[in-house]
Image (cartoon, rainbow, N blue to C red; front, side, top):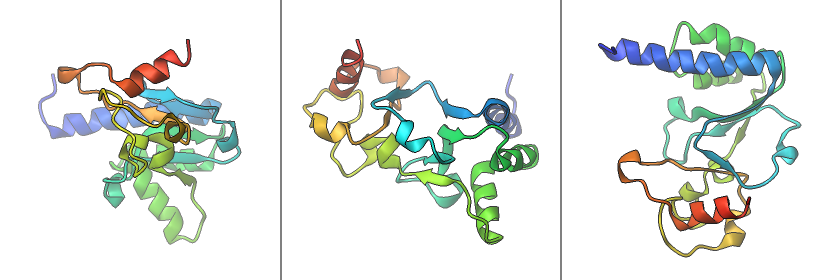
Length: 166
């Protein structure tokens, strides 16, 4: 049972540590289960990157870790893993540390590439039943669902994406 906020922080840190360790060992793309792929990520795989959390997030929380690409044995991941056990907001802390020391950090994949519902493209949320411009949707690489489990219903964007890959 989770008794206090420290337990919640430790669980989140362990989740981050798991994804970072897997990427460090094997390299590749990490994505959370609420991510639907719209198009091929190949044009993005020549660099290491993390997707931006959202356009609404503050600097310390700008990375969520829900979509990222790193190479095997990445020194960025090594630094994040060593930081994970002593602090929270590890992604932003390590990113800022690199900047402070004049070292170029990993790239930031803008939220519009990974979460077009938050972009000024006018894309609706995945669970809203409205008409939308399919061409605008094709500008993104993935679509984060952000499901609300207590009010879950499939919307027009979700139905379109799932139907286009059958």
